Each structure stands twice: as structure tokens, then as C-alpha cells.
Amino acid sequence: AQNDLAAARKAYSSYVEYGRTARVRHQLEDRLAALNQKELALAAKQEVANESRLASVPGSPTTIAVLPLQFSGSDTTLRPLGRGLAELLTTDLARSPKLTVVERERMQALLDEMKLQQSGATDETSGVRAGRMLQAGRLIAGGITQTGNDIRVDAPIVNVSDAQVVATPSDTRTLDQLFTLEKNVAFNIFSSLNITLTTAERDAIELRPTKSLAAFLAYSRGLTFQDEGRFDDASRLFDQALRLDPGFSAAAQRQQQTQAAAQGQQVTTASVETGLRGT
Image (tube, rainbow, N blue to C red; front, side, top):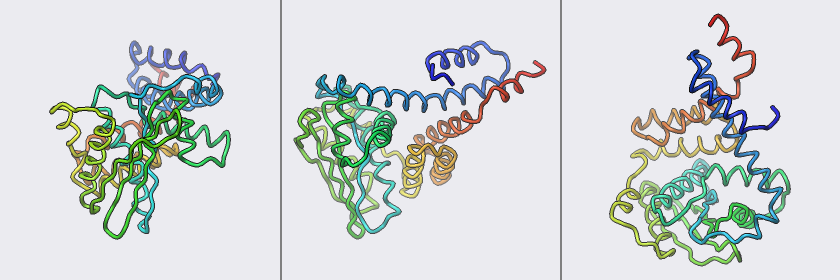
């Protein structure tokens, strides 16, 4: 409550490690998941407050951030793919140890805080500002264009220091080839950055997250709700993605994460005391 989040994490973690009451341990494990969201929001607030100092330090060219992709097309049910494909690109770019990739949640928290502080900036301008605060040297600020059953992804690579586009990896496929499209764009980004991948890294990138497009759409909608802080809704959508494809490991991880965050928000002094009563 005092925003001393480091001390809160230490206290919760201490009980999880040493406490004997399983019910309270589970409560505080959930509370730690909710605390993670508070930590991201507080860090973003501090980054915006220190923008002039942070932006004066040039970011490393090997540190890269990926913005949510902007969707353009008649089928608005596909709009959440902007979040889902950005998540896939973030995951695939992190396969190479030659890149440091900014976590999607950290980028989103900073963009949300910037919206609270001011309005009127374009997405790309906001992304460049966020990139400077995060000390990223490169930024992927792309878009998805739907034309009929075709999907095109453009992923321009922006130099954060001068906001100049240095390359625009892109690909066009039918909707049922969505994952092939994303992989091609990822490989084109590596090529544009002059990064040579090992066979093991290429094989890891080639892995498809799911065989079900419907599951991936549900997962992408879940990411949207997660970014909005609607953890119950996000958890239900990740669960839906799992029902459509029980082998969708990323959806399983997100489902556990958002369910814990939703339950952690309900943990109070009274609920902890209830859990301890009689022990």
C-alpha cells in the first residue's frame, strides 16, 4: 500500500519459502503475480519521470523492442493478431543471444503510462520515445494489412537515435499460412540486422506455437485483455486457446499467469488472516 514493492516482494516470498500454511502460500504466490503488474507500472512511471536523463544515453544497437502491430482490414476479428504476432516476433528475436529483446509487458506498461501523461503523439513517435527510455537501439514498429484472404506484415526497423527506418522486412501470405508469414518476417529481420543464426537457433525459430489458427486468435485476444489489466477475461481466453489446442504451451503459461494475477488482486489482510486462523 505504501508502494514499497521491493519490501512487499521480499515479505511475500519469505512466507512462500518458510510458511507452513499451504492456503496462505497459495494466496501469496498469487499476490506475487499481481505484484508483478504493479512493479511494471511503477517502473514505467519512474521511466517517464526520468525521460530526459534516460533518453540522453544512446541505446545499444543490439537491444531491440517490438511494438504491437497496427491492423488494417475489413475483418476486425483479426485485429488482436497485432498483439499475437508482436509476441511471436519478440519470442523469435530472443532466440539469438546476439540480441537483447525488451519484454512485451515492459514495453506495454511504458506505452500505457505515456498515454496517461500526454496524448496526441503518433504510435511511431510514442514508440521511439519509449525505445529511448528503455535504452533500445532498434525498434520494430510495423503493421498488418488484410486484403481478402491475404495477410501482409510490414516490420520496419527503426533506429531509435534518429527515428530513421533502416529496413522494412515484409511478407504476404494467405491467412492459413500466418505462422509461415511470421517466421519469414523474423528471418528477414535477422538478415537485415546482419545476424547469422546457428542451425539450432533457426530450428527453434521454426517451431510453430500451435497448429490451430482459432487457438492463436483466442490467445491474441487474451494478450489484449491482459494488457488492459482484465485478467479474468484474459485467463478465460487463454483457457479457450488451450481447449482448442491442449499442446499450446504459451497459452498454458499465460493462463496460469493471468489466473494468478486475478486471484492475487483479491488477496487482502482479512483473507490472509482467515487463511491463518486455527493454524
